Length: 371
Image 1 (cartoon, rainbow, N blue to C red):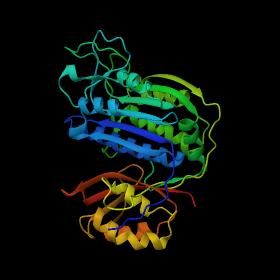
Image 2 (cartoon, one colour):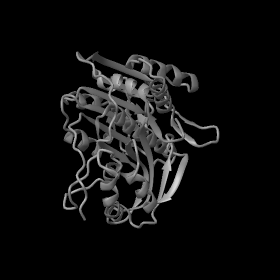
Image 3 (spheres, one colour):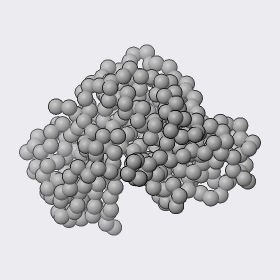
Image 4 (cartoon, one colour):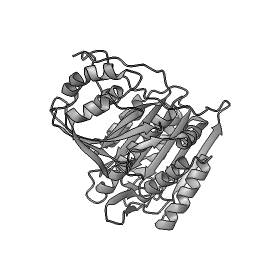
């Protein structure tokens, strides 16, 4: 099978590290929604700013202290990169902890494995990346026997001029660190549900994303202090806990100007490459830097590689990760994808795969630029 090599762009990288304890029997369904919301958001940020997204996504059984340690130890960044770390799950603190931020349980029941949120900040500070953001939506209450340790739209996303301006300002024009968690010392973080009872996610995460997306959709000239302060106030209004944050940022000397976003997905030249990211390949097939004739020519080979069957079910969902916009077969999806206009990115929301890694079910969200 020959798969085309699309335009390669040297771009700054957004390193998105997301951990969510979706297996927890009490809050797992809320953590799952947080995971969906945050993975959608980092994909949107990357699409709006032109950064290449590098994913470090861990949920369910792979959300663990060991995987977090390995990820931080192996992280390699460049001077203009951005790091976003996010955790949703249980958290706790020792009565002797000096940090105002909690220890993350990360699916573990053994306190010696708990990982301080501030330890993540310490780790990423050593990286050359320009901007480092550390967010934790977890409890910050004192736990018995814990030792101290140091240290929402329904359709496709369409990026217009306003969100591109705001995303560019927040993620491209600052240098330094941001750390925040959903509750202050001694408090429990809580969850929220929609009016119909469906889990919306952690209160802090829901408020943070709501404030960020409101600023983005209205093209506001917002800064990080304003985003986090309004997030704190809004969280306090709907739940009885107070987020805490510390911001140490400076504006870069030569601010980036907003530019029209482009589909920068690349695909390997042949199937002999060691690893082919199937979502990256699908996004590359929707890349208008290649002619429709070229894209249509290789769609059948790509269909056979990516999907277990031409009849595999593909669901397209809205920005909330839940509302089903359309359902189609993999074959019909590939036809539409190979002739698509203005597609920037595809985000995998949920999937099932065979032993060979082919999709037997795929749920995605689509991100476009305005025509």
